[in-house]
Image 1 (cartoon, each protein chain N blue to C red):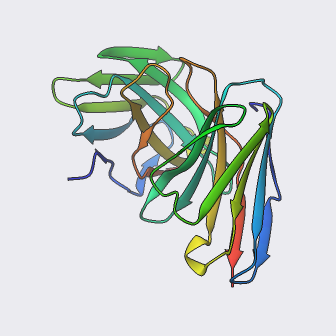
Image 2 (spheres, each protein chain N blue to C red):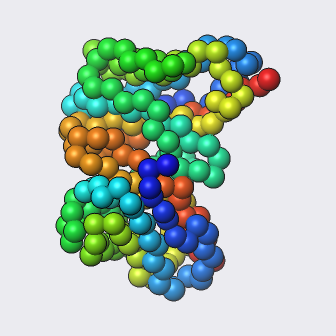
Length: 111
Length: 112
């Protein structure tokens, strides 16, 4: 495994509540990414980070925010969760010029 | 037209068969190509990555890129039941790999 830990692995919550997912890496890689995976859509990039405090939006960033205060941690926050954000969320890491490696995901259900 | 097209399957084969998985793409700027394997309830696992056109072999796996046709393939020789998974192609236009475009994945089932 690429030294990526996602937490929690499963979460059930209610519409309108805030949710934070954490990605922790032990590889000291510069780049970190958040994806969501949904049937019929595949993997879609939400946000990514290219360094501490440096982040940018991906394809499906609306309703999500991210923060990276340390190299090893990348947080994804749903400020007010909606049912359309029910999904499996994957974190990935990479170093410049190298392909991405993925964590095992967080299954998030919003009721 | 979607940027990356991949037949969702499922593709069912007997153990020992040669498997061919394919993706087509429309963006001629893509230069870096990857194949990931994803088991149920797990994250994608990098299998192969290649630059530009040509073949790359790793054990039972061969990745092939034909940029003129905008077509990439993954061949699996002597397929095993443990190869049963979803295979995702991914590609990037830049060397940093910072943004990947994924296919939706092909489910492969290898029966004993």
